[in-house]
Image (cartoon, rainbow, N blue to C red):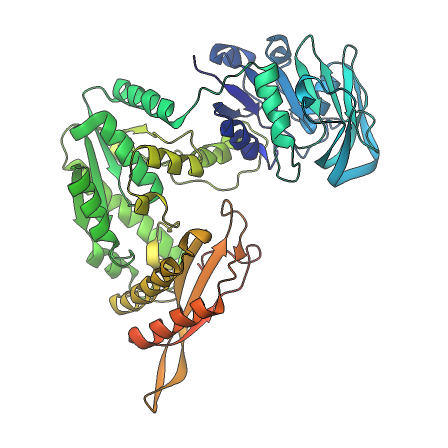
Length: 512
């Protein structure tokens, strides 16, 4: 039996977080826009439905709503914040402006401790973010909890199994919010927590084999977490029908090309096709300093090189990509969701028309942390699944200004020493991302009683949960000192090292 929870996204910044919380209880869930039809939901046979919060007011004329027929499916529903107000409005309750807006930590007093609030006592700390509130509950609904400012902060129609909470149980600022979600999943929806990485592997292999049949698949293998895990999963399903193309654009980190080649040829014995296009990339990047131009040149040339290599392979009918679920969710607004498009991801709908290949995305419904768990389950080498994020354009956007072989070598050697010292100090896995940047300036220095005029390296290390926001990592001074000493003494062409202490926002993690 496959368990499923449908999350309907009304524009909340926390929709992905709701999904992550549900999956932490081994219950599979999917995020959909409000345009999803009742028939579509019925065909998926979910155990429950969760309405997310959102920035709109239900009292507005064009406030997002879902199909009224969804309420008639007989499937348990939990409305969060805006979702609760939507339920109240639909069933004839009254929603109005709160006399006092509730933002931030708020104490919730539990009036009815059954099912949804089981094992939570008489009160709990919650996180609120709303201006509207439910003034009058619909007929048939009973009050479950209140706050000082909201007489009805949670309600339920237990007969219909429809519940609402004004607070956000998915955020860390609601310490016992996970218990509320767990109660909904297991007490109300009767879930059993059947979704595991092992079950995902079995289902994926079956789906991949049925989809591909006797045809062949080509994958652009970069050596990053997503493409590496995709490659191992596809190889497990397809064996020699999978072809991996690794394009060495000359913009990789020290030893990266050799490591990837060795891992996937000697360890997995895959169809691994190595393309050395370093000279071609450097030739087109010569004299280009604008970061956006660099990205466009690298992206366009990669597709050309990849296409040429793919055309030489027999029986290729599918292109595999390492698209992740956040990319899919962020792109859903194009199809009717209320959330603003954060980015147009290159893996979502970005198939070159000339290739005429069908798309297969084995990680399409996984979050990044789940991909790492999947990689561990598939015995992907730890060095592959625990590595820091690395940008598609590679070191080209970590060299401010012109990109050439000499500057690439300086940056590679400096960066290698930075990472080595983080590993030696057991700090590599304590930071989200660490990198070195070659600045477009030179500075005066003294080496061996002689004046030098050489390059400056900026070190960057950040802590983060998802990369959307980040703080600069407070690395120990002795570690930074050792890194600086090694770079200046061992990397020819560098006489100064600086440390970036900017957070995101306002800065970005990468410099370009």
